[in-house]
Image (cartoon, rainbow, N blue to C red):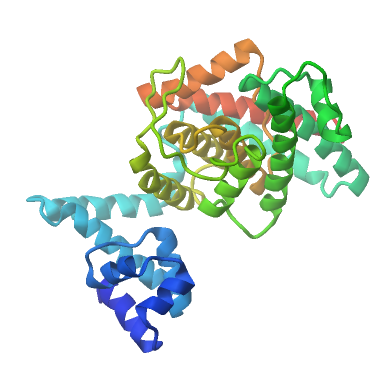
Amino acid sequence: MKTLNLLLKEARKARGLRLREVAQEAGIDQALLSKFESGKRLPTEEQLQLLAGIYSLDARQLRTAWLAEKVLSLVQYEDVAAEVLAFAESRIEYLRSSRALELPGVPARLQRKLAAIDELKARWQSHQPLNRLQLERMQDFFRIGYTFESNRIEGNTLTLQETALVVNEGLTIGGKSMQEHLEAINHAEAVDFITALATSGEDLSRRSLLELHSIILRGIDRENAGRYRKVPVRISGSRHEPPQPWQLDKLMEDYFHHYLRQKGSLHPVLLAAEMHERLVSIHPFIDGNGRTARLVMNLILLRNGYTIANLKGDNASRMAYYQALEKVQVDNEPAVFYQLVADAVVSSLHAHLDLV
């Protein structure tokens, strides 16, 4: 099998393209492309997809060569390289088998909860499709409630009624800051964005995440909206220390790869909870990480036929939410956070079913 750098170089030459032309079309620096072809540097997953499209290469073949290079870079100088590869092969065989779907690390109580959730989901889907007017009214009702609670978690002081007036009527509430108004408007628009995205053919990706975040910070922080942070951050009151800015590109690449790898096997509610927690823990943005992570969670739920899960923002609920997150971040124990999200999904499905 040809190495990745040879595949890329031969494909470019076969199409009669110069590095400069590829750089212009792909938006990748010419010097970086040269390093890809010499084998001195590996492209990111996003860059790999771009090059596959430009060269009309089989994406699966190219990705296989790319992954092989990544594995080789990790083990080539290890004395136990052969043993590592043999162990990895056995793990891959396991993950492809039905045993991987048994969720051995998930407590029995939570597995029973997931089974109950899927029964509620089936009941909800049996009422589909709703008539247009009924659907619009329900979506608006839950969009406002979700916007209110998600913003309240972050300290927004607009009441539920004030949130509805700002979002639906465009009113200005006396004594409330402009930022609080924008947070309500932006979040409601972001809910519309994930609702539309859930029914489209586009999946969660770097592009959709950055667009989602840009909506959240629109008019609030133009410089940082839709961009990964460039400075270190600390989370007030938390023992978890987010990674340094120079680590973000790789961590976020791994984040999307993990999603693609797990979405076919992990229960959607657990996947939604995990992608939520991972994004909050990486903390890739200066601001808006919590709101964006909860929206990503709900994008995954909506794509899989569930309803929007609304984590509450009152003091007790917010404290339980932060403590459950820290349990994963510091103690590597996700069960409490999984349970918290599962409970929110149950409440949401019941609330939706009560209205049909």
